[in-house]
Amino acid sequence: MIPRQLEPEVMDTREEAVDYNAMDHGEVNRLFVDDLLEFVLNGQNALGNSARSVSITVLDLGTGTALIPIELCNRIDRIKVVAVDMAQEMLKLAQENIKQVNLEHRIVLEIVDAKKLSFSDQTFDIVISNSLIHHIPDPITVFREVIRVLKPGGFLFMRDLVRPDFVDQVDHLVEAYAGQENHHQQQLLRDSLHAALTFKEVQGLLEELSLPKNAARMSSDRHWTVSLTLPRST
Image (cartoon, rainbow, N blue to C red; front, side, top):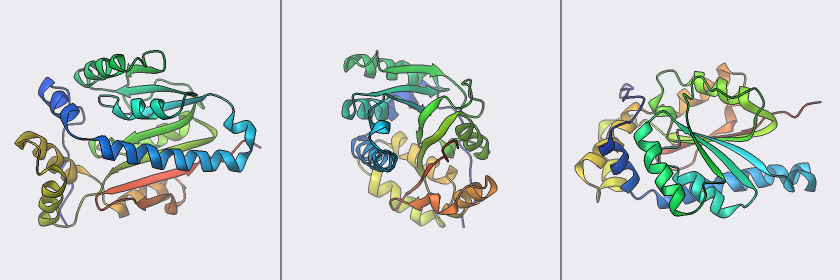
């Protein structure tokens, strides 16, 4: 098994931000939002009509250039998103993206460290992240913060890359999913795969937090997903 090789926690050069924003994330982002909404709407249906009639506050950790919040807000009118990142260059492009689609009133950008969130306990209905965890040296810190800021009955939906067992598997995934991208964009994916957790490591994090291990699943040939609903207050 290849060892985990950490990459910089913050991608904060203009080149990295521009290359990331230019990569074709459309299908991945649409699938993320499809799966998120299916999970949340199924959970709300179980709670009854009252849960489906109120506005929803979402926290997006490691938002990058805010492509997922834009996709989400374009789908559901009653959602408002606080989208956070540590990379100022990413957030500059995020602001441009949000302005282009006139969503400034529904998506708020903030510079926030996911390991030390500046929000009060039980603030958000939903916390999401896509491709953040592989940037974090000790990911359990993020999971603890997520649980803290979620409301009782709130929804957690996190997705990231899986670290393959062998280098040739990394090469195959880079060719399959970034073969048409430029060299720097291919290297971004390669580095991310090396920095990612294995599926067993994700399950281990959940067990350490006394969360159900089966909340984690393999959702593609290169992604894990954790989806769970916090217990409601009694």
